[in-house]
Length: 317
Image (cartoon, rainbow, N blue to C red; front, side, top):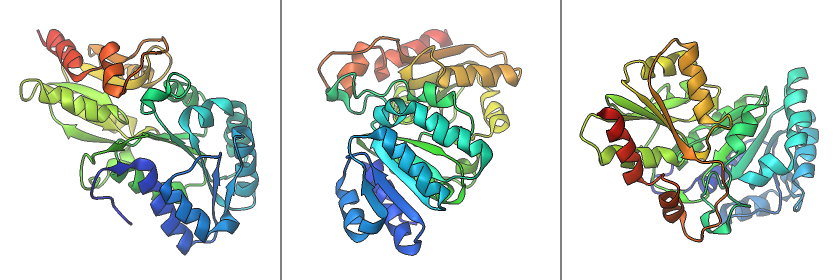
């Protein structure tokens, strides 16, 4: 497996590894909804018989993916995250979630641009709803890697498990949080990045933000858990990791109160009988039209590292 050693875009690392696997296996097919990348150009040129650009037609992207999967292919379907989850939600429900209850199909949805990573493109390209709506569908795995190392490590599961999966990738190049995943982290769906009296459970890019918050606080106050997958995840192991915390924070670049990470965590704590104070940090249910990069947007909505550190300190008093 090729493991990135420097900050790269998750999609480039993921597609590079898919390209390598396509050289080894003839049953992998790649579909794109008129969405490219430099890494994709090489794949397309080498495998024109197993690459199709369906155009700006995400509904058809899902329909074709199902057809190929029913013929025995392992399919990767690639588009901008808000479009591959919302523009074709009915097709994902009918073609993938319902079909998956009847028979094995290996379709892997690659959504690029999670959260506000397409910051300057405005609310049409901000993807703040996908965690919520994809969680409503049974038989669909949901993966939210925080760096390229984690994204590449997930590929074996994508190839090996004949179920529909959604990979929520950030649109920007991010530094790797570790050179590799520790044994067992991928299987249980999370990794502990930092220990602390209180714990912040974050996913995707927000794992980076959680570490920045912890760095502003007294040593040992805030620990950080990186939730790599919302489904499947070893809920018993995660509950055990959260149990020692004096308080639990969730941090997501998604709408609050809409069924995303906050609802996932509340349900987990309740199911495990853990009576812990829970504070949910994320995006209020309002679209943002401000101009500026991600940091400016986060500053405006209270998700800067300094603002989040202040919340943790207030809870610690």
